[in-house]
Image (cartoon, rainbow, N blue to C red; front, top):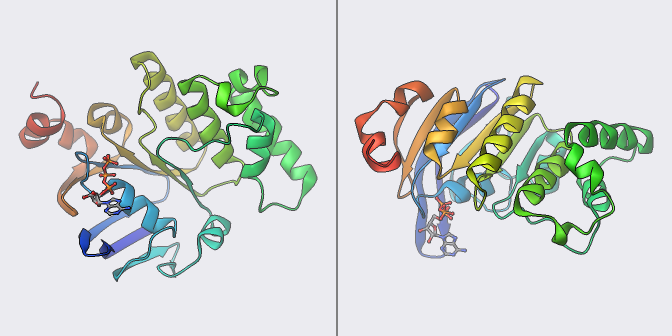
Length: 236
Ligand code: ATP
């Protein structure tokens, strides 16, 4: 097991946002957490990446308890998050944004090789490498956010709503990129409101409702589950 989340309880002051969340990600998998607004998806990712603290429960990554590990140490261990809303640096160039993704790496030659690798993967970013991040289109910004995360050489990539605000064609492209990254060996935990797309590329899925996992299973099974169809796939 690559990541195991057990009985996760997280609060914002008096608000009990996660009420005992349990799930796991195996090596090589794409696992998706789906659920409506406010279900606790982002809270779950932010707790794994160390930005929020669990009041109760544990997060174990590759056999090591990281529940109380600092965010930068979690990145060092191989978990990298692409945050909701991308959070790219608007006044830095594409190249500078990518270099920021490698900030923990002291090996200049390796950074150069990694830069070439991500620019090969995202030709659109190569074309725009000197452009300010803030002037990229929504789809290009999402590509940059994913590319920047790849610069930290993640073992497990956490993706928070990569489809948000993108046209259907761009959503398809981003999901193809996610599958491609997974096929190259990176495990993926994908948070999405677009349940259809997420389940279509995932191995397994979990449905979150008001801070609890209410349903889990192989993604293909969830795609055909009447409750999922009714609540998350528009009833078709
Ligand atoms: P969305 O898709 O809308 O981002 P989500 O499933 O990611 O939804 P979370 O953002 O994790 O949901 O929110 C879970 C719950 O925690 C919600 O009830 C939300 O209002 C609450 N919450 C989130 N952030 C805060 C905060 N900073 N302060 C107080 N409550 C918060």
